[in-house]
Image (cartoon, rainbow, N blue to C red; front, side):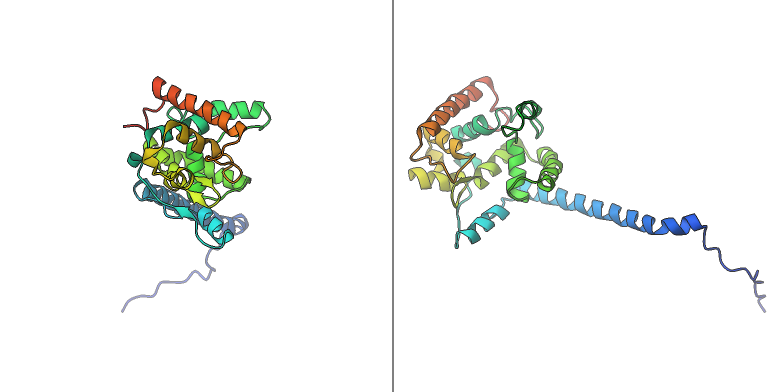
Length: 246
């Protein structure tokens, strides 16, 4: 017959007062770590997915469709089917050092700070992250998320893919998204047939597409387009288009 272990008669140890007081914080830390890991997995998965799959309607497109009471004009076209000058034009207009940075143009950021934020410093990579994954508007939450996701996009996507997605989700007029829809909307032709002047005008409307027209440019827009035209040719000559051209 087995012998029963003798009981000491003492209650089980419950830990010190400090250990009991810290227990809820340990539980909270454990769950915070789990949430961070889940967030990292979600971000990596979302970025990896769009590195090979084309985004459909972005959150901003869906918002605009509801606001306009219907649908938006949007069609996807591969970069190989877009006139090469169009990609060079948006780089000249929005991010001249696109091939040289890792998602953030530190020179542009320093210049913006020195000028008192009187100018933007967002790269094409940052704009893609905002347009595809986040929302419009200026607030610190979005900027913080953008700062986290942008290096991941730069690490997992090629520069060519970033340009391709950018051209297909950018807004070129109210309810008109993507370069192919914009080329048809303004000039009645596919994006493959855009001339250098037409490409420069499309790039010139990007900062404010709801108030500018590529088909009927103001004098100011025409001057801006002329500068972009020169910049696109400079980028072609000095090799700053090598990271996204075949």
